[in-house]
Amino acid sequence: MTRIRILLADDHTIVLDGLKAVLKSSDALEVVGEVKNGEEVLTFVATHPVDVVVLDINMPVMDGITCARKLKQKYPHIRIIILTMYAQKSFVEQIVRLGVDGCLLKSNSGQELTDAIERVMSGKSYYDRIHTFVAEKEDVFQYKLSKREIEIVKLIAEGLTSIQIADKLFIAEHTVKTHRKNILRKTGAANTSQLVQFALNNQLI
Image (cartoon, rainbow, N blue to C red; front, side, top):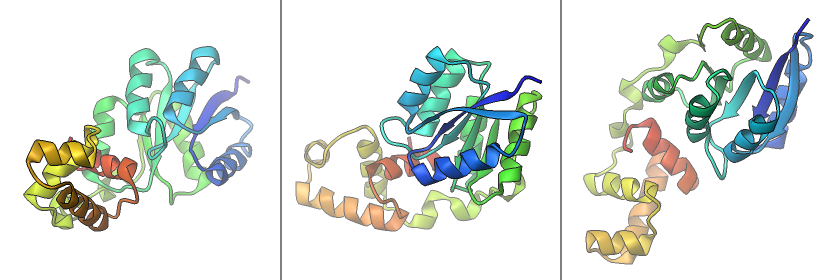
């Protein structure tokens, strides 16, 4: 029996170890690699045969969304399952448009991941509990971001520094830094990477 070859991508070792332990329980599955970011995924699949990539969203260097987009462009035969903490309809709609084959909340059990892998390999999609991914309460307005704050989020996502944003908006650098602190507090983002992911999920960029 040919085993399904799986590449795991997550920047947390403890998560990788847990996923590997779960998947090892199935004789039909084989973990052929473990990587920490999207760039490492692309490097790995360029030289190793892979059937399914299980991707975390928040990874350094290259996030899961960007990686999924590049994978689908270069290796359309590889199935992609995204693991996420986000339960937002806008996020699901985005990855469906990218052609991602499946999506699971990280709170789900190992058995559900095994089921998802087998389902996407049969040519079907697996979006667990998609009806629970709601839009209204997850809308960006829930976070009470002002028009100026949304503008700054977009500029941060473009890679601009606080000084560059200040010059572009004709405001003081200190004002920009204050806005950044307030934006992080409102959105719950711990860093710029998570803030960019927030912007993606809420279709701000």
